[in-house]
Amino acid sequence: MQGNVVFCDDVRVEGSGKHILIGVYPNGMGITGNFPTSVRLVAWLHMTGISSGRHKIEFFLQGPGSPNHNVHESGDVDIQAPWLPATFFMGPFDIPVAFSGDIIAAVSIDNGPLQKVGALNVSPLVR
Image (cartoon, rainbow, N blue to C red; front, side, top):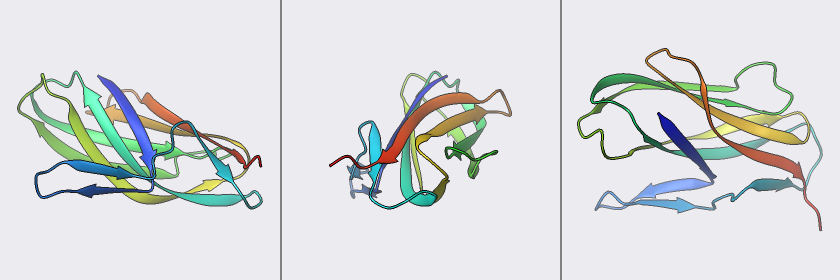
């Protein structure tokens, strides 16, 4: 499985099924306040290489300075066309951020090992 996560403020779905990502963070987020803080994010996940059939997907987010995962979402998916990417969006989530660093996103399929699918750097806003 290969995956990638896009962090954003919101995801909307048109009547046609098209996803519209609002407020995408390309590689980092600038914080205007002080640490510790929390940030609200939506995660849009794009995965390929999942075999056909029913699978348990688990999604995790961990903020910098956190000793464990701050978000753990899971669900079942039935892959009928494994040559096509599977896309999901989840959230919004409030992620605690103790200090500058990366929010890490990871996925597990069918209780397998965690695979990192993305990160978002959080640091003080430079003006």
